[in-house]
Length: 337
Length: 301
Image 1 (tube, rainbow over the protein chains, first blue to last red):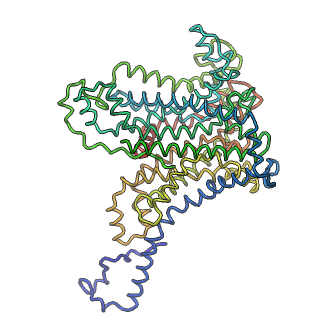
Image 2 (cartoon, rainbow over the protein chains, first blue to last red; image 1 turned 90 degrees about the vertical axis):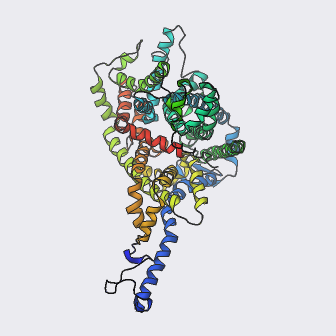
Image 3 (cartoon, rainbow over the protein chains, first blue to last red; image 1 turned 180 degrees about the vertical axis):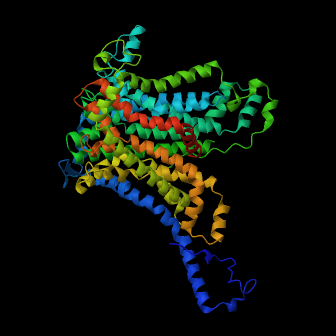
């Protein structure tokens, strides 16, 4: 779809024979038609090309995002087995009643919530503190920023495997360090809370630096004079942080909270690899099995894809609720500021 | 479900008013970090890097040494031996090639499509633009993991198990990319330049090719790197459709080492190290640009 260079409305040179613009009636009929055609093409181009530009994204999204998401809902009303994924038998809501009757579903939901809280809250608080420090004038500031992104470059698989060793009960470095300061060894895999803390640690380690950079970026966008007038009013540094920095960061904080919440609802790789022998059950007593892991266990270990779909849709509905809550909160924030 | 992040107003030209202020009254970026700030930062840096360094230490030891206390703090002599065994055992050569292909195709496609779509959203007027942009933002909130079951059924039907296209196609959807490029082009591409090209009679595609792509190049590079990292580290979906023995990506291969029946920890660490090293190198070289890109995407996000 190329348009010739001389299609635009403004002055078109006429071969150079006649100086200036030739009178309209000097243009041959053929030429008028040609220009009209080009002008139509031009209008078509202006009108339709935006849709052409955005359509690849939407086509891909419909094929690999929207359609599968909706089809998950459809599949959740059927019995589908992993061994024959194309055979679907209508069962109505039975998949949902089955999972809601399963204690391990509720266990996984609770674990997802607690691991979500243990991993998200300290992560964002630390990221805020680090960002605040990075906002000072520092020597070698780029070095710190790059170094704290190294965990982000590390894959879930590699990070989980290393932390499994560091958290080892008998020979792990963390228990050794605890022993040095006189604390009894902790069974980081076997016990409920320690195992959830350990899994959360992997998440915190990977994402704190990244979030710190996001906060830092938002802090740097705060106008300097806000601090100056606060300082002139006699506000201490801490008061400046409370009354200038935090309010300005509210949208960013909300944004990172939402992103982290969505991430936390999907936790899968870390608990899967944290006890590689138990795999999908998330520990011997399912003590750190998340919803993501439970979905995988139902679908790919027990081979009930229909039931796994019901879990996926339940998670989707939970996310919608979170989205609505987020929307309401942000509207309140906007209204109040 | 909208992202609620409104871009903070960009700071007006910083006045020199602050020079009149007493030193104690300065704040924010003008403050110099004290020793405590440095101490916290260095501690945080150590915590960030230590697990990676220790991966290398553990990879340079052997299984017996890792089953003793205290754990090793310095390198042993088995590093290259272990790296070699892990390389062969985990099929890492093929895994690297596969992952490079997948992440490369995915990053390149996302960058091109996102730039074009981002340009349309940022600079062109068309019916339904705002509604469509809201949909883009909404899709950012829906994690792709929720769609894996029908995708898996598709792959099974097409007989794509263990084939790279099974991983490539779903990875091409990136609402973040569209959003990122839109935000960049909104301010990096002056309307006048587009107008000028239009007046010269350039078609929309010519504008994209000759005006948008050159203007978007820095953001395209950053987005490409971010997407490459993301696809390289993707875990759940490749893990479902690729097998360790068939046609693994690096993540599948490394995870397979950990779940396999060779509980040799030093080998597992060697595999983890190999799987991480390429990206760490990229970050070491382009760290500044990546940091800049993340921060840029954040403020305008």
